[in-house]
Image (tube, rainbow, N blue to C red; front, side, top):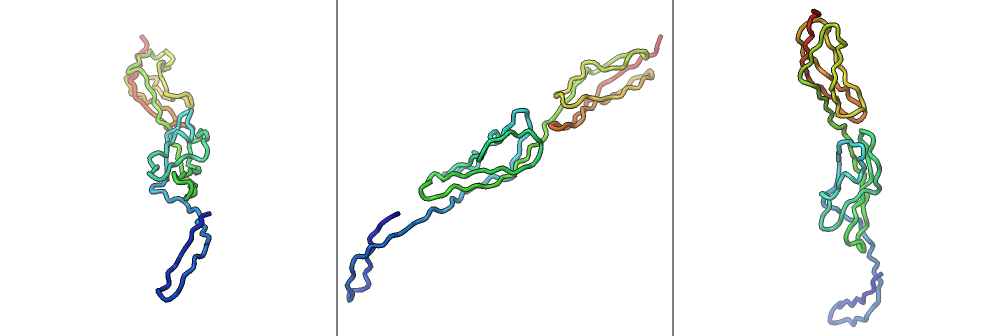
Length: 176
C-alpha cells in the first residue's frame, strides 16, 4: 500500500487544501515476450521433462521453468505446465502456461557382416547381427536353395524405437 499527498490547483481563484488519499496498485500478470509451444524431444531411457530446456524463451524480464519434472518414458504428445517467473515479482505475477511436448521414438539401427556363406545343409542363421536396442528382435528370410542372395534384415518398430533395416549378401552353396 502506498500513501501519497495529492494537491490539485484548480485555479488562481480557489484555495486548495492538502487531502490524503490512499492508492492501491495491484500486481499485473507478466507478459513474456516469447512463449514455449509444441516442443519435442527424442526418447532415451533417462529422459525427464527438465531435459527439455526452456531457456531460449527467457527474456530480460523473466525466466521460464517447468512446474515439475517428470519422467518421459512414453512416446506420446502430452501437455505440461511451464511457469514464467518475472524478475520484478513485486509488481508482476508469475504466469503458468500449458505446453505441448512430443516425445518421439529414437532411431534404431541393425548391423550385420557384409557376406555370409552357407552350405545347403547348414542351419541358415546369420550370426553377428547386432540391433541397437533390445526391445525387438531382428528378422530375415534366407532361401535354402543354392545361389547368391541379397537378404534384408529388419528390426521392427518398438515402443520407443523406429524400425530399421540393413542388407547383407548370402551365398548358399550346393551340397558336394
